[in-house]
Image (cartoon, rainbow, N blue to C red; front, side, top):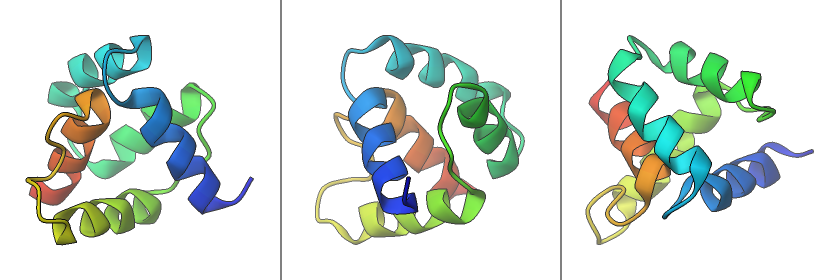
Length: 84
């Protein structure tokens, strides 16, 4: 699976009102670094790297809407990555 496809799948699965969205949003306060996020996601079948997350967060930051607005756990993850 390509990195782009993995990130698209992550965004689809972790946005809005989904089980993964809720679990991810609850886990983020315990993350100390992007690697913690990678380990969390890898354990759930997502083949992403810290660089993939940083690039996705940078793309989100270029959009006109605030980063992660209305995107559930995925949005919280993007805000975490930007803050780090």
